[in-house]
Amino acid sequence: MSPLPGEANEAEGVLNPASGRTPDGTPHLLPRLVSAGNVSRVGLAEVVLTDGVPTGVERRGVVLAPDAGWERGKNNAGVEDPRVTWIPALGLHVMSYVAYGPLGPKPALAVSDDLTNWRRLGPVQFGYQPDLDTDLNLFPNKDVVHFPEPVPGPDGEPAYAMLHRPMWDLGWFRPGEGVHLPAGLADERPGIWISYVPVAEVERDITALTRPRDHRLVALSAYPWESLKIGAGPAPIRVDEGWLLIHHGVSGTIEDPFAQNQQVSYAAGAMILDPADPALVLARSAEPLMAPETAEERSGTVPNVVFPTAIEEFDGVRHVFYGMADAHIGVARLERVG
Image (tube, rainbow, N blue to C red; front, side, top):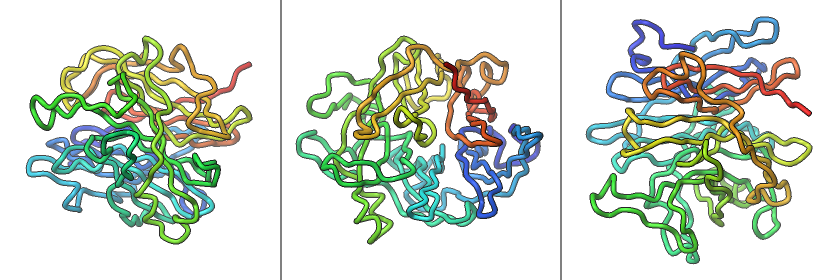
């Protein structure tokens, strides 16, 4: 998928899509559409299949725009980088997205049963955890994605879990403030965390999903290809070995984390998380599964980016949809070898 000439909502790119299926089973993407001034909306686009292979899209309009006050600042606005997880036990698609509001990027949630009509649950409000000696709500946070079914919580009881990626440097917002790390964390590079909400609370009130607690670190950068930071990609997939998590890793140099012109490379890798305790990493890729190679991946709004955000299965083959240099959307086959 590439920006449609003359379409104002796509003037600065189409990228980083979520995905899902409408009640009749038709696969769709929910791409981030970027208009002039870096204002993002979430669109809906039906996936066109040719012999079981995704080859294009048919646009179905915009399903979420920065209409809420907390999704807009005086000089910015946006609902960005959606991730959608179908949770059968709830009968709902759960969308996490980045609300680019007055205090920068903050995670938020919305739900739908048809991919077209979305109900905002509101911003994510992380529960205070004394042993961290900080408030996670102070920090920008991205790459929120939910597990598709309940997992064991820290107390052993079933819980809905979300992965997320807090960023500890507050200097971008308050000059001179710098990095504030939680207690027990010595590495300031953004990594993948997990938080939980007990199933019983969500069954009583779906908005409980916005109030996660029991925050734990899952993984930090470990290899050169992800030396700057890592973040979760599509919703984890259950495989024989555990939970398969496709993630992105960033290498290079970042001077301003919110600037579009960066000397970085985004690549895709994978982890296996323990099904008995998804905060534990059982295995991870020492080398990227996919790195920028094609012209569309190497040249764009942010050059050298492959950014996986969605997985769909067609005729028994899984396909990963990903952002290409913050300008286009590509697709790759996810194959198991060995």
